Amino acid sequence: MFDTRDEILEALNMPIEEFRADVLAPAGSVPLPGGGITGMAMLGYSNICRSQCLYCGMRAGNKAIPRYRMGPAEALALTGIGRELGFGRLFLISGEDRGYSFEDIISLVSGARAQGYTRIDLACGEFSLEQYKMLRDAGCTRYVMKFEMSDREDFDRLNPSTSFDRRMAAIEAVIESGMELGSGNIVDYPGHNIEKMAGDIDLMRRLRISWAPVVPYMPAANTPLALEGGRGSLELILREIAILRLMLPDVDITAGQPGEDMKKGFGDEQGNLNAVAAGANVLFADLLPAGRAQDFNVVDNRNLPGLGHMRRISELSNRPLILE
Image 1 (cartoon, rainbow, N blue to C red):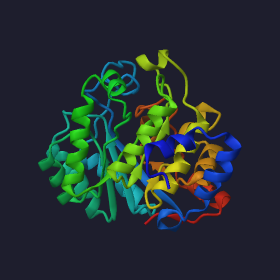
Image 2: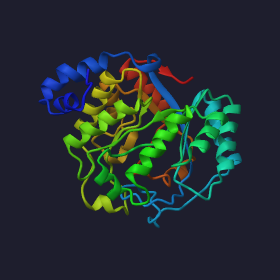
Image 3: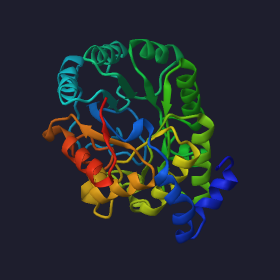
């Protein structure tokens, strides 16, 4: 099902009732990877970024947020808390902080592996093939390198610190390194359309991703793109999740999706339940202290509520919570 871009486009254009019956309902019946909702601990260990992406609240040009950088020891103290809470899966993420030495990134990954994490995902920017192999050897299971938008012109306009060709080369290097790949798009950003979205979904299929960290566009303060339009469509993100689940039944898909109240961010209960019903399976618990979590603001009101919220979503959706 959905073996071509045209088939994906046809589903995206279906009338809503037809889509619910023919795509959404079947997607919600596909067994989730691991047998339930996957809970992951997340740590944003640096919010310093060299890049000027027009949509990201942590872009280098945003002078309104306090910047921080955690050394490996400070970061590992927090990941240790996550391990004590029972999380076996960890997502380490930062801005493209070139002041953070590659050796320290290796130390952070290997240190988290030594704490007993069985899976470690990492997202910290574009590196060389040899560096990706070093991260793999240190214990990184999956590297997250989002292509954000498959339209070359859109990518180059909205990501002026890199290029579409450079991003795709980095993605190919991740694949060649032997790590799993997490990659996906921003849904319904200003200038996006259904045809481009079909291309995004088809690219995820062709890249053989193992995680689709897909989200709707959410405006961030002090970013140029926020002046061009508001939040992306909640209906379209659910359409994408359902298509992805039927097309790639074994991939992880982010379930931490927003709802109608933007202030609740990715911790909106109904938004999360809708995503799970469409086939999504991954929720996150933020390990950052409360006073610092607001500074890791890729988007405004990011909000990742934690283990108690995961348990509630698990209970309300009647799907077991998987932490290990």
